[in-house]
Image (cartoon, rainbow, N blue to C red):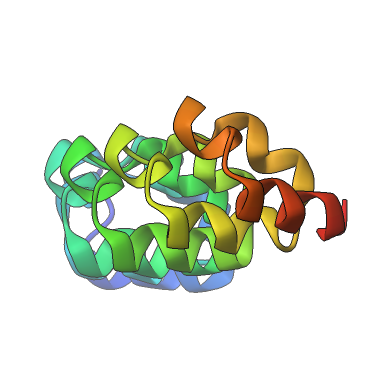
Length: 140
């Protein structure tokens, strides 16, 4: 017998990493997905619709920046979401859209705290003196 909605919430509140043990409908249910927020790798197992939902991706990306990898292409091109992910995990720059990897503000945010992330910047910005200087002084 499949667990009902209330039982699914109880399971997720107990341990969000049990997300994959729940029925498939849970992967497309926004409330369920957000209830699983503490399961840091949950986003990759959600439906395409959830990976294209700004609220869901912002929630996961701002807590666990590497989740940007599992966001839709549209949201990888959303500056607010990308900056939130980078502020949590600088290497999220790797998953940003080409346009944002060519945006000086976005790249500066990443490299100023972790210089190694310069490798994910566009060629144009890797040659930019301000970006190079920020990367040289960025921790990491």
